[in-house]
Image (cartoon, rainbow, N blue to C red; front, side, top):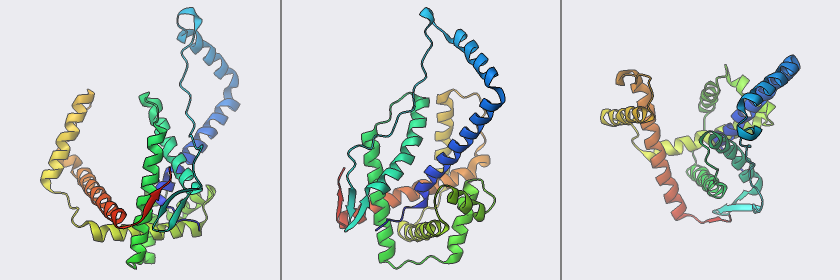
Length: 265
């Protein structure tokens, strides 16, 4: 049985695929429009960048995801299987994000740790999906359309139709997307009903603002920190999101404790 993957994780791959397509297009245009100029520029940069002995510093290569030895069934959650293909698709999207970050930071991706994190994330999602189904939570068409509009805005697309068309180009049918959005809406309703109060107090927003200022000073940034009132709406969203994440994690932990979960990694 093919599992329903939450759209939030698939969007990672969607964004990365769009970025890759854009980069390929730009690279193609550069090569066709000025191949000679590029060669000349590379030779100039090579002579300038050479160190002693004529050696040129090497750019770190993008690491590859290690998917050897992944079992056919990565985990079992109350009798439901999380299969290899589901894990690999999610892992590859997360790995690409981590790999890009590692190139900037110089730190190598800990793939063993990332595999465990992805497996636990998929287990948590499955537990939430099962609980939403057990409680008989329904998703109205209005809620589904509203979520699609929000997702389109997040990806800076003009409409849900444009969003669906973009996902279709990446191999996802409209029926598949609608099914996953419906699942997402049900899980969102479950989380909202189970997590309780996530409102941001003035004290919590002020504390987060002070943390933001301290981080800016620690990084030595010369830009002036915006006033509290300017960033208050963003602070409110961040506090609410943080509280919701913490309470969702507690819900997942409780569901896991009461359920039957086996991870085979």
